[in-house]
Image (cartoon, rainbow, N blue to C red; front, side, top):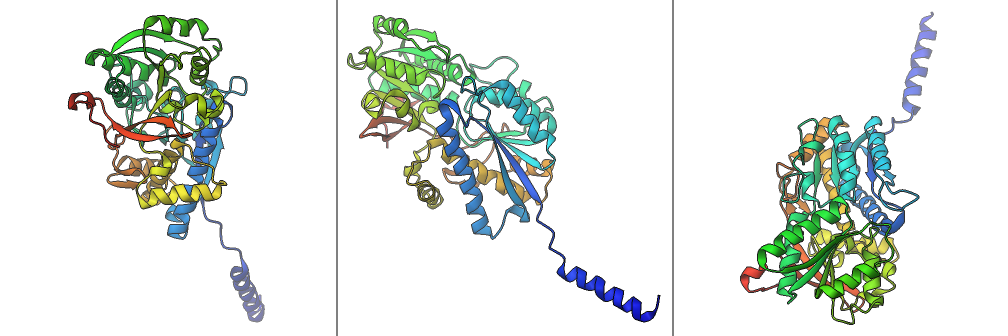
Length: 420
């Protein structure tokens, strides 16, 4: 090759380098898994919108994704197209899809505690971080009075903690609800549950604490999500003399039907009230019971935190206002708050890890400490639980869930003093 030809080849090569496209940033995938159809569709869609908003806020604040990565949310539905409720087979498939995708660095789910019991062993064996925006059954992470003997070790085949959550748990919520019921003047309660990990678990916690503080449990029954006629059951409630029904339900497991039929059968007119946990604390409850007027003055609810509109931090108000702006002033579901906050944790863990590496991201999440989320500052304890555990009680009045009061399992010991 002549010297002139060699120079020409070099110049052409340099020119090619100058016009070559810049290599695309590497993409990290985050798989979400919770119901996007069925009875909790509105909740699931709101959580997904909140998670996406958290990514948008991070990129705007940092002029790019964490550690320079693009973030792709892969939204999976773990609800059955037949029943509309979460399905164990689908949940297992969703978790395995994440594990099998080399770009999936975090499994973001589930909504239902029972679904978490399916996916947790899969993600644990794979060494991938899993974080929930809503699970509240304590047995997923530690032993409690209502747990089976092999919980939570059965969910950790590797022996390493890989599961986290930013919301508080039912071993606080159930007892707090029982104490609140006593403080509100109820002397006798009839307890229902949906037989599922979440519903039965929180009902068990409520009963154990109620009995310890002298609140009479007039009856206890379980129902299946496929049950639609509760006339015989509610007649039993009426005969029991209870003035409160406590129901361990979520939106797609019978709770709305119980509330609706309590109204239709005159229990509300007779002064019998309904109290439910966070699984029912959603504006979408009203659509399923025939309107907010059915619940007004008759339904009490508990939730691990303030409603989105009442978040006090600057970041919390930014989340709330921007969510409204993006969604035609549609109120975010209360659990959208924790979906946003959990995504904040995911993005911070990726930034800390600085690599598309499952182990590094898991280690970063496990080591999270003093994190400023939109509900407050918290860390993860040795079980993967948030160190921030507060609960509020709400009523339904003026067409919305409101009138928050702080509740706790010991509030009856201070002469039932409650603070808003």
